[in-house]
Length: 101
Image (tube, rainbow, N blue to C red):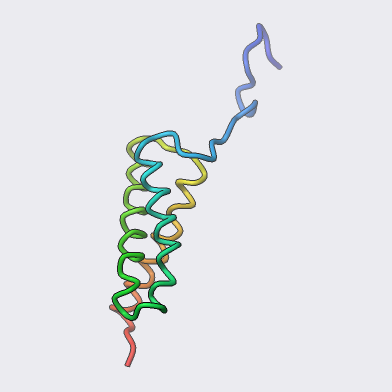
């Protein structure tokens, strides 16, 4: 029950941002988008062709973590920017730990 026009303690209207609200969040989403675009370059340009995509995914994830942890960014797109980062980390760890013949 509310009194005096105060909002409910638990619940109430919350707006979730889709686009980043900080500069770091914008950079993170940009690097993640570039990573997604450049990943097919691995198949088209040979072994070194995908390196810019991997690098931009790594940078985008690091910047997204900084935006989330230090700048209190809560936009959905910044959390989605962590997906290419996780993919790059899993790929690199797989190459180092398992490798291929």
